[in-house]
Length: 168
Length: 157
Image (tube, each protein chain N blue to C red):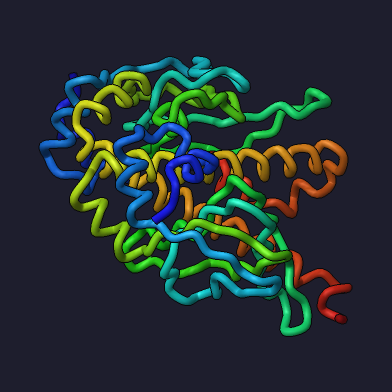
């Protein structure tokens, strides 16, 4: 059980009506994790959806056996582990606490059961997740555009910018 | 109003139950645009969702220094302007018909209103959007990492 006030600090939940926050508050747990705790492991099922209250989490992938690439830092107010909201989905990255972290967690199994009971809850949470993806895709597209602007010779090497145009 | 059969050709919605397609069809229009028609501009708030039935659409973006770049060529069966479903988002590109094109259009505001009136539809559509966005982000990240791993300095590490 967590306080509704804590849930209101999470960006993804900002449009969710209070009666739905009450449902989430009953199901959620507040957890504290030490530095270097691995919260999500790539290619494994994601058991929990995480909403970061305090601290910083690195999102990374292995580039070579000797090199890891950190491609995002999750800050307080942000969420991760969207795979937990989706049936049969596995993690596409590893998430590790960069410092001591405080996070609200929701069991993926339980939240998917709640989605079947309340389409309203499912709609609002998935809308929040979609907005989060859209923002990240826009940032990436702008970074690529800026790079191409400064280095037009790279254009021939970029074949995947269409993945970021939200065309489905 | 658009008959549900049209939606069966659209990858985004083709697997949705008929009940949902009929409700979306009731607030949709089938429109034909001439070559070079401007559908929406970069940095404008997106008002409509577009599902291309026939023709071709270019998605262009203008950089800070004013250069134009074609990001994507949309072919029949594909959907663009999806952020109209989320509300409050401006477009990162300009959409222009590359040839005479027929498409299903639906107001983002009316779709969001439909979601609020029937959360089952909102749930089904938003689940599809999240799954597709997640898959897009993963493909892009993997492509980026693949390119990076091919870099001589990384290969030699």
